[in-house]
Amino acid sequence: MFSPNTIRRYDIVLKAFVTAMNGKRWSTITREDVESYLAAMSTSENTKSSCLSAIRGVFGYACTHFDLKENPCKFIVSPKAKKEIPHVVEVDVIAKAIEIAPRPIKLAILLMSRCGLRVSECLAFNVDAIQGGKILIMGKGKKERYVYIPSYIESLAHEVAINGKAFPDYTDRGFRYEIWSVFKSLGYEVSPHMLRHTFASQMANNGMPLNHLQTLMGHADIKTTQVYLHADSCRVKQSYYKSIV
Image (cartoon, rainbow, N blue to C red; front, side, top):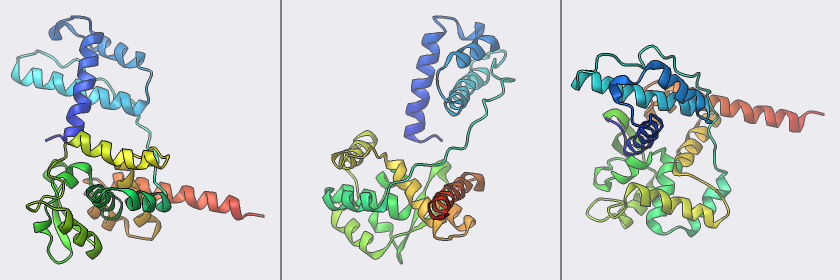
């Protein structure tokens, strides 16, 4: 099951692909058509890989449910995705945002930057489920994990919650916009997911074992978690060149 954000992204990708195919029937689209479409995209290899995944998936669905004879993407090799170092937000910037944000958004920023929650996990957050300073979270792919909630965040969550729900009045889009707006008012471009990256980078920089961080982040593959070690290496390199005589 895909997250709302993934569904929205795939919807945009597939509509663009259909437009580019200029009315061709799905059954007549060839491997060459798909490869030419990807080659013409002026985007990163990561984006191309994501687009191919969406296109391959819809053809696979058509083969299973609509008797399409062959998936034209079957033998297309995905573009080599670069492992990008996640952008993080400076601690003092987060502190300023927390200071000026309305209480629900203050809570959201804390849950993402101090507990590592995703947007979808925040929106589903129910304070009544907090027990002993931790809460069971249902993450991507219905993967469960425990997340620890410091007492000051738990107190704020109880103050903000309505019938247990921390964010009952927010849509996904509205929630993201409110968080972005707080940082924008301070002169910074910060997406909600950058706050989650910041949490992971801080944990890695402070020496948390990689398998522990994997558990807290809810990553199915430890390779996803390893990118935060690269972020740490960059800081070491920067510190070295600042200190070297």
